[in-house]
Amino acid sequence: MGSPHLQPCPGATVGFVFICPGRFEANRGYPCAAGTGANLARALVELHRRLPEVFRSVSRSEYVITNSWPSVEYPNLTGRSVPTEAEVLSAANLDRLRAEIDGLQVVVACGAQAHAALRALTERRSDGPRVAYARHLSQRSVNMIAAGTDTPGRIRVWCDGVLAQLSGAVSPPSCASPPS
Image (cartoon, rainbow, N blue to C red; front, side, top):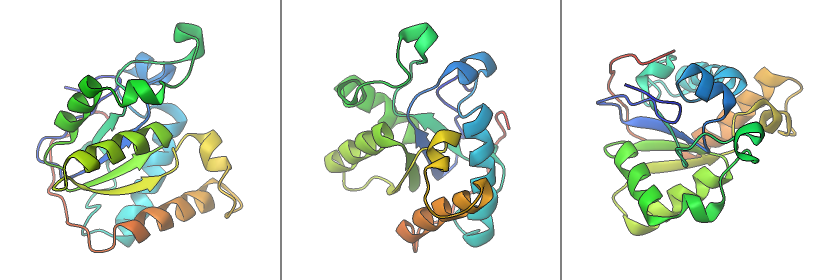
């Protein structure tokens, strides 16, 4: 079963790590809700179209989706929208994240804190997943992609970067379906 910070997918070999759950994730009970979820859905369509041997489905339920920090963060609740890098890099947090992505062959790290966490994990263990580092898929972040004139065009550019990093990555099997 999932939570605001984690959508597990037993048997999956591809996953996405974002920064932390926010207000929409807390309200809906699963990660990447609202705009970030809509942009992830757009990206999955493009990733599947262009690299179906790795991104075997357009459905988010076929992937592990988690966060570099499990706690819900948003200004009205915690006074901030993201954790500190030190919190993300704490040993207990990295152990939690490692367990959540254990068995994955490919991970797309989305956002600065996710990048820091995955770099720390790959420094500790050379046999971990292949990692592509990408900007976060929040609408604000996507709007900062210089190329592309609209959201679909910017998502295609985002996918270009992910796919360039994953040339030759391994394909995932299907799994059960958490929220879509």
